Image (cartoon, rainbow, N blue to C red; front, side, top):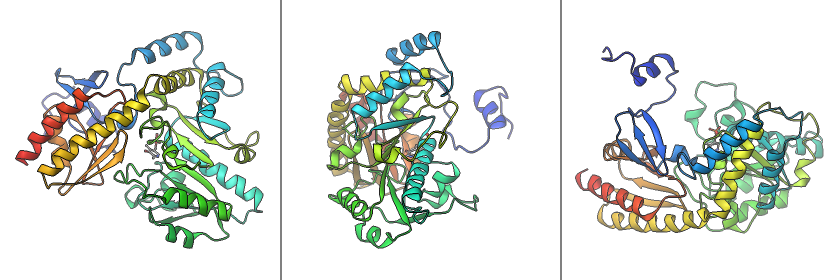
Length: 399
Ligand SMILES: *Cc1c(COP(=O)(O)O)cnc(C)c1O
């Protein structure tokens, strides 16, 4: 089939970009708040938010101002020198979390690489190189670099990439006795997402994360929380771990930290930090004054502008309204999530539903074939949720 317009965005992208993404046939050209527009001027309400990234919404005036101001002052100098925005963002993250120190990088995968490296280096030093295996969870997702895909508990991201990075074992999520059995004197860390997001919005059972913490404490294991998706107010707390009355030793952040400006961070306690000595780890672009100035503004806004409360309140409201639909339509199997990370497990394939939503002007996406994932900007209000519920009701009625 020949494309009618060889110069269309879709034609160019399909010809010149690797075919690694199965894209929806929509070309987005602008966004404002919770809405985006395509090249034909069609409006969509965005329940994907750049995959849980655009917490403050699109074209946030705050981000525009900080980007503009900081880009006129200093963009990048490398980590050979101190810069003020980086130091201030680190203080802000430390003062609002369990952590004592921060390493800045550029993505979720890079943050998880740093987490894996610090856990191994800490334990190799402490236990004479005898402990370096990491237990992670089946169904998890930690990224696409070699180490992070090796740590990921889903075969589809690993296919074709042998040999993988050694030293990862997998146990089922929400299964403390399997975890306990997997621990031996070769294990140094447990790595998990407090809520498995890419895995289908799987929430931890009551007491599970506390149980994981106890097993780590009993065996001297480093507990790594991948909060790349659950962090930054998404679940109705600044960090998801706060819901569970425990603290990890290491935590990774990325997605919403820069509201779309690329930045990642690995946070750890002072005890762990001792393993990252001078020269132990580095990155050219990590924590540029531009990225950290933006992330500081984003973090301050999430904390100070009521977005965490809104995430909790709108999450509850959204789940309540989805619950009304579940009463009416048996095709909805289960509603899961905390705050504004919500999964709707369906009895049927999600793709036709996602396409029907797009057709009606709503961006949503699907994980694990049957789970509709809803991760809108944290500024979302009742009005947008109500519009979605009406449209979704129409879709379910005719499906
Ligand atoms: C998105 C995601 C990652 C990977 O982040 P990238 O920025 O795509 O490398 C890692 N862990 C979790 C939990 C994620 O949701």
